[in-house]
Length: 291
Image (cartoon, rainbow, N blue to C red; front, side, top):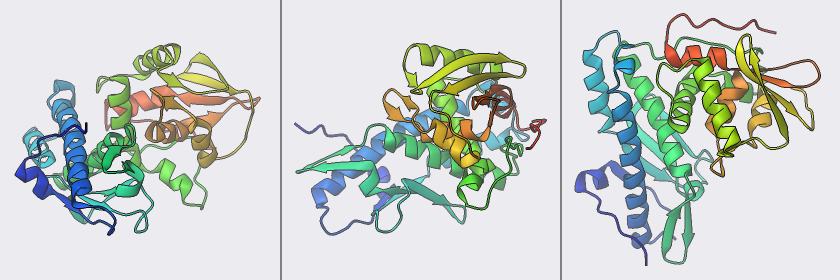
């Protein structure tokens, strides 16, 4: 029997649906319920995050903390078909408080039943909500992340710029924190310990790769059994087979790609020291030397 969730009138009003004709009213109701359920979880995560003293201390104006927490409760949703946009979801800086979600990519429809595709709906809302929070904090005069670069200059194919983007990095750091259970002030050593624990438990899986620790600066060295060469996009692709609890981790793959470089022999070095600095503070992040 299909499980029903209560959805409030205010939540229903915040979820605006644009459906193709084949989606019945009953399925629309189920999609509303799934979005509302996952949205509550994501909101709870961010409300908790912005209540931590480590996070509050990073704000220039402490009154802005309450503004952000109130803003999170106003975020609305619109569902669109794959034919309109192939992205899992997106937001626009000039359309505040609205998350657009891909109905075809995020939901499975079998008969009269609708379900979310694994954790993808939650992950997408978490990522897109991070962008909206980023935009809101900028509007309030808060600097959300210090500009930071990886090892390689971007090419002109567009994909490199997506990996490099500070706006995307801000959202990906939120995903890394949520996935690994990181403290907002976790440094490179803390992150490495968490990653090794996740790799050993097989919660985090990067297939066909040997993993070793590096101490100066703090990081991990991945030696692929099948070696490849390339730029930021290819480093992102290198991590693309990584899974967390059996699901692909696109945000973390791209974050790792940004702060990785090739070592002699084709190994890939992940600089956790710089990721730790990005996590801890929006000030004083040192850029690795460009190549």
